[in-house]
Length: 432
Image 1 (cartoon, rainbow, N blue to C red):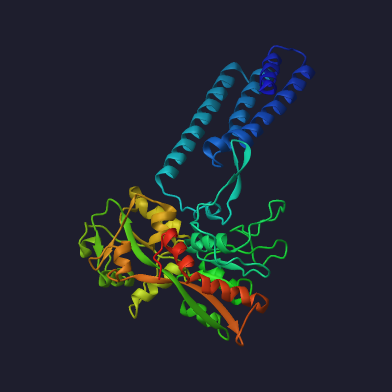
Image 2 (cartoon, rainbow, N blue to C red):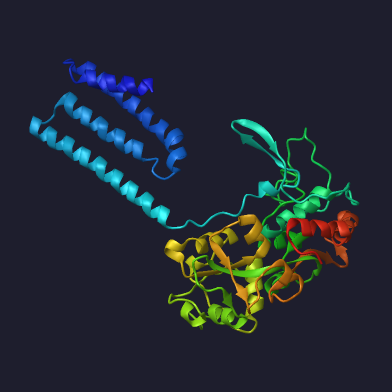
């Protein structure tokens, strides 16, 4: 701050010094001091207060202030003109501030599409984080076995990938059956955001979402991928390969609205008519008057695949670009915001919505009069209960990475064993 104070002092002094060379030198020094102050504010101060938006403001304010000093130092105009210029500069600063504040208010009124949940929380063996400036090891929040695992893999470890909603589950499998990472090794083979296709780092267990995980499987980069199902397009892409879908548990595919929406139940027919575009107003399905904003996910995402299965032969209406969400979290956050999207309808999976996002401003809908509770999923009364799968691929009867075949088979068998199923239940899914 002393540099900024010195710049102010130098410019104030230049107002009273008559030597034009000295004035010029003080003005140059003042300019450098103000520039330093603006850079400091934009890089280190404002991002912590308002984020990246508005970091250009210090340059505008210090520029206006510097121009006012120049007017008083060199007095290029008559006193009346200078006063008008100063008042105009002050008005400009006020106008810029008002526009910036109004922009921030508008941004806060419009929900921003969120990223997926932070997967480091579910890393198999925890991760290292800075807490109050100190590097601290944070343990994983995944489910853990009460006893020693009957399966301990070594040698050629299977590469795992899958859907975001299933990462806590197969991360729990990893913690139980895979070797712990070497604490002296800087690489992290269990980084959920690592790239299985990269030759720079060795990764065993990652999470790239359903479409990319399936591509990793058929490309030979992943050995087992954990998915809610495989779409027809994905099967076509895997033509020539033998896909095996091993059931490992169950979850519910659910629909949700904002918590203030009066609708509590939709029939299967209602859902099909809404997503085919036949029904467009909530009043037609027992709610208040308001156009239904029926959100969708991209093709080949796990949830979009489930929606297509529910639609059956009914046509699926094309959704506007701004109503298709690349992440499930984005859809959930948009529905949760009532100010601008009170009539929206979304869908996801029960575990992801209930345990991973923990969003309290949405309401899960009953379907055909049955709520998506664990009991109703277990007894089969909820209509959209679906199985979770460990998917593998073979070519000519052999895994794409035959050197890992023994461990792949061991792991698949263990997933449906009592220990594997206990982790399914402890995670929050329903065991077989």
